Image 1 (cartoon, rainbow, N blue to C red):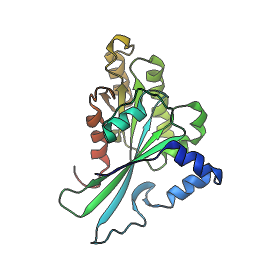
Image 2 (cartoon, helix red, strand yellow):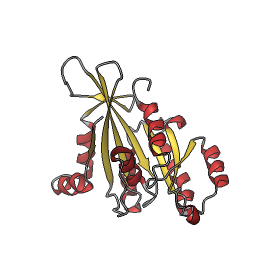
Image 3 (tube, one colour):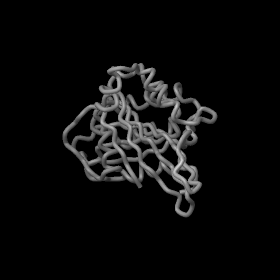
Length: 225
C-alpha cells in the first residue's frame, strides 16, 4: 500500500497564487469520472496489463484541534506528534489498496477538513463526492461533542446521498481519562439519535485507530474486504 501526504502549504499557498478556490475544485473534479454524483473511477489512469483502477473519497470532519490530523497520521504513517498545526482548508492523503487476487487497485483519498469557522463557506465543496465520513470530537471538550450533531446535519445537507452506514462518530483522546467531560451515556444517546456507530480512539496510544478507519474503508472499497 502506498501513501502520500500533501502539505497544506503545497495545496493552498502555492496553488492559489494564480488560481481561485473554485478553479482548484474544478481541476480536481475533472480528474475523476463520476456516476450518480459519486466518485467512481479514475478518468485517465492506465498502468498497463489491463489493470483496473478506482478512487474513493473519505471525509474527516469535526471541530478544530479534536485530533483529526493526528488520527490520520497514526493510521497512515504510524506516528504521533505533540505539536499542533491547524489544517488550512483541507489536507488530502491518499492510500492505495490492491485487490487480494485480481489486478485491481483502489486509491482512497482522505480529506481532512479544517474545523475553523473561517473555512465554513467552503465545506459544501469539500464534502462533494464523499463515499464515507468520520465525525470526530474530543472527549475532553464538551463543546466539540455538542457540535458533532451540527457537523452531521451539515453533512446531510451537503451530501444527501451518503448512507448512515457510511458515517461513523469518533470520540478521540480517550487516553485522557482524568480530563474527560463527555460521558458514555451522552455518547450512546447521540449515536442512537443520529443512527450511526460510535468508535472511541486515541491517536496517542493507537486505541481503535485502525478499527475506525478500516470500518470506513470496508464500506467504500469496490470489492469485499
